[in-house]
Image (cartoon, rainbow, N blue to C red; front, top):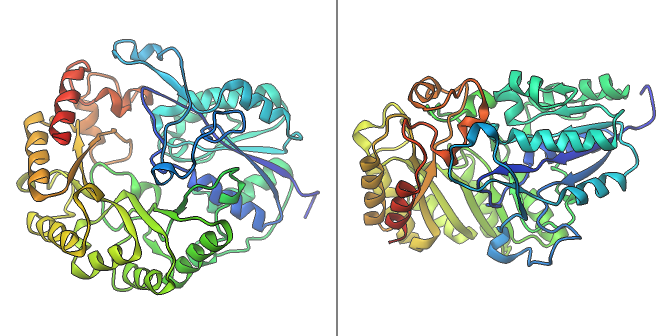
Length: 446
């Protein structure tokens, strides 16, 4: 080791958008980095600009809605590029003066790591980095995360960070720490063995009201609308034993009852992975709940997996249906057939799941998509006995569907990620209108 232990500050930035809500959203990548840094003897602090339970905010129940809830928001001006969108724009998260005060309460860090998620949220990242720069002008700032990787050149030019990471964190984290702080440490885990990773530093949160879980990484599918394969080319699984031990750790040490499965492919290879995990949870006797906002693969749901999920305490199920137009979905994915969908819904109902617990995501706003196709899919899902959940399409660089999205959009998607915001339904030649959104909402809610 070439110098004293560095102090590294992790920051989850503000969101600038037309709408945002905490649907069990935690910066899992950033907090995983926090766990890795601590396991290498590095001191870590954390500021969450989205913290719904900031000490200066109005008191609210962290456990309401199983951990979900609205962010604090402040009305701000729309980006000039979106002047034509008839919607209000806001900063979601803590007030700027609170953030600045929190920074001033810290000793000057040796390095600041800022994460990113949605590509079109970069204005919030810019404001976050500028605020950090105003308080710690001499401290280097590294930006990582999904925007940093998918829109690397844009982030490098526009984010304000000193360095924009392109590789996965485990591949270059320690070398970046050494480059910017002089601190050197040998790797204490195997990046190819998920069981060897330290737990994410979720305890850095002032309030832990739910725990996100990653039992796998990557996905064996290569869907046209998804960047999972680009971001995580390999599909890796943890051992069922390690997953159960982590669940017990957070429940017994921190009293957590709500766990959120962040996997892209939890049920894939179920006999070796999900089923042993579910059986272990059932044997544990823990009184806990599970939620799957990232969607489950429908093909893998049969009578066994449905029964075990119900017995294990799965409370919120989302299914990755995307469209019920089964005859014309080959350009999107090959994840599920009509027969497999009907079988899965039947098995879930027989296991005991209620209609309000099970929702099927349906993509809205795809390139050249007819609204009648979406309406038919909504009706199909309702007729099946579960809940349709519209998921507005975000055009994502480095996906198969990206060129079609660019061609279909009324905006120059390739010029600026701000135009990929799903709230403006960008892959349409027509200006945004509330009429279609309202129509679909009425269909889904009856």
